[in-house]
Image (cartoon, rainbow, N blue to C red; front, side):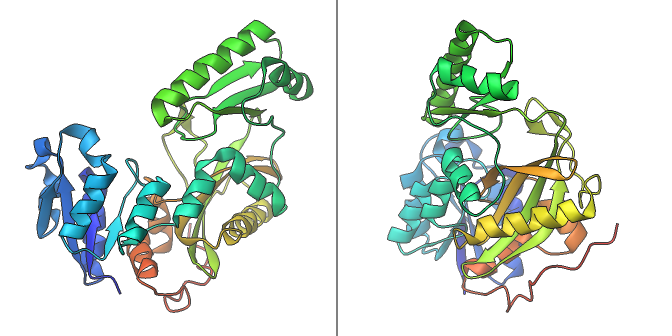
Length: 332
């Protein structure tokens, strides 16, 4: 059972986590940068620690964050989303310090943080994937894929949010392909410290559907799905749940595929498995192994507090003890 949780984040998500910590009878310890000592999230818990430095850099100082958790005698750390939430080094540092990381293991974060490794996992368990190149393809290799599928998207192996991503149409020549690869690599290196790329088939006219999954390290269940097709510049604007624009049988297959992928890594706590759907066909896109910004959409249709669920599972409670077998079909 978790008793004291360092919340390694700021703003509304830090406040949201603090409320969940209180709801399970634990204490929240907040952190802040030196220039945010009066920020609203600081007073969301009974105690706050000022990290060295100003601005975002303070929250990205992994060593300082773990040191704060140790000094505050916390037995758990919740990273929220953004910042260090998907950094396997934070999960490993917490493990080494004897602190429970509220999220998947370092090994799982590392695997899903590499989009090519995630694709290979999906393919190995029988989940459809798009046609793609290997890592760091040459312009000729991308041209070969273009000739086969018509349009491709160049993606960063690490990171997300549309950074390190470029689209190429079938009429792109080798010069345009080389320029796109170079530009995407520079952006990926600047954003994620990893300039590796790959190219995959561009799926035209697809819906973007993501399945919320929860696991206790032994069993995985789904908590339905969200349709996040409405986006601008790779950023989600509006989500709907359940994904009623996709037929029921395809939605069932999506949930099964998401569970299969999560079972392949013995998922613990939360993850979101994303797919592209065209009619009754779908392909795997990626996995976000953390709490997502849009988690509240799932909470609205299920009545399940996902953050409190994360905390309880991290503290050793099983899905059976939480009575979290497949949640009933939400009313629409």
